[in-house]
Figure: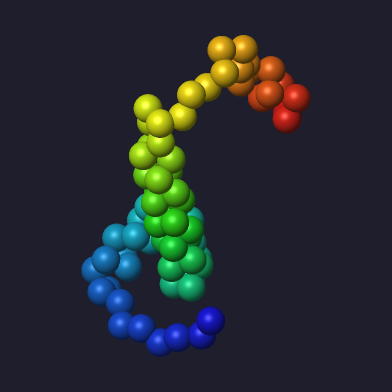
Length: 67
């Protein structure tokens, strides 16, 4: 999606210090991805205490198979 926006120059400069982005476009895309990931993690945390995990669940075995 193409759009024009006005960005805070100080905030953009500061963000570039924490990123390996080479352009503003790349920086904004990275920021949006991190924003969405953050909110997805937050949604998962809301499930704490609401989901029962099977007693025989072995996450280590699953990790080894996916490697």
